[in-house]
Image (cartoon, rainbow over all chains, first blue to last red; front, side):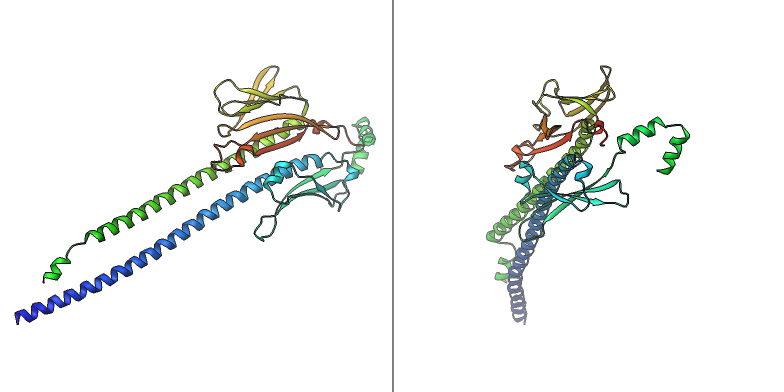
Length: 170
Length: 181
């Protein structure tokens, strides 16, 4: 009776150990799967961070290029700033190296005020991989300076009734 | 009974396998953490650099637009190199003040009035960044260029970084131009 019982216990334990061995294999598989998943997520995060950093750098370059183009755009005479006009700007060598197929465009737009123009400098570059081209815009307003003779007349008549009337008319 | 007694502990193979796997997992975790920390640090440095560059561009353009004359040395100053600061350029403003750009521990913008220092502004860049000011003429207008050349220390492993130029251009005396007829 005792022998039978002890054999039974031994068999049970033996079978449990066999089961335990099978579970261990499963555990390894699960662990490897989890590890692979974690590694994949980590690599995805790092890739995204690096990609964002590269994009950020390109945007900084594009913004710098737009600022430099705006400097030159402000030197154009008022007659050259016709509403609806668009002109291409040459991209600097440095920006051309960083930004693929970069295009710098200046668009002049009219505003409700006839003596003001809206200048839009747009820098566009292709981001590769069949994605939409990236672009940034820099906007500034250019005001027409008062005509010199009008300004001189206003200065002369300053403080007089004529001057006040002239300024009210304006 | 004998069999169960034998299986009570772990075999050497199991121990070795567990140790190897644990080392691998720990190593991967440490490497990933180091990589993420490194990328994060260099990214935040780069963002700081963009902010400083934007601040510098604003001040530089504002000075150039109000300047009557510019004296650019066209020599490069290297940031955080021991020694006295190197003056890379000076602008004479219409209101009688002058602005000096000096490269030392950082790029300094110093405003002088009657030969006395009245204001000082600093721009933090990384060690090894080179700064240069040049005067150029285009279409009959005088432009002043401020170039910041990237240092290899800043972008480790980035081959283009050493020769990367951040260039800010500004028209000299734009705010003093005569009224357009």
